[in-house]
Length: 222
Image (cartoon, rainbow, N blue to C red; front, side, top):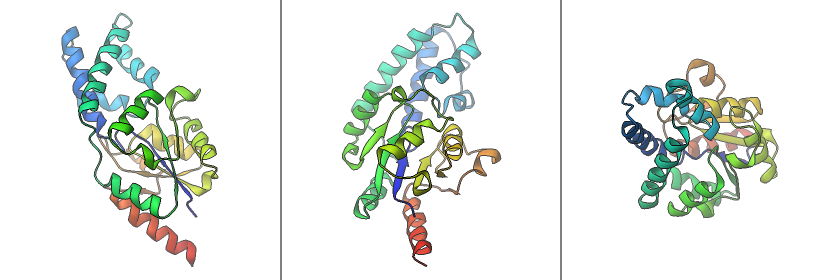
């Protein structure tokens, strides 16, 4: 029986990937690079800061001003999200359902804690979560399972009692390698077969997770 639900943040709860992509393109244009498109952006999905930076170094070379690129683009991203946090469809309804049915909830994200707390506070959803695990608090990022296994420990549930909600392929693989059931709600990219086959479901929205949990409770009651 599922006792705890683990949430990714960017692309899963928050439509921050669209904002991030736009600000990356804006900064790249300022630096004189105009060949970064949405297909290129898919390579950064689900990665922590180190992994994202490596994508740009691989594409533009060791002389690419990665620190300047990262710092200014993220100032713009955070500024945008302070004005408006775009919540994904069905998120609040799902969080209300989980609270009403006494599920434990935890955020498990590659983003740094200060950013996570600020975004969730501005989105008025921080109070729904029992705890969080952030990218600056683990030694290995996704697709390593450390983030999700740590999340299980924080809410005191076994991996087989947890359900991960993810949008990215690295996140799917991290959950699978941690032996935790994972549902994918695709954002910018529908998972390739290798990753899709490692999910228990691929759903259109977070609202659909309510139906999944209702069915799971009925099966467990039999």
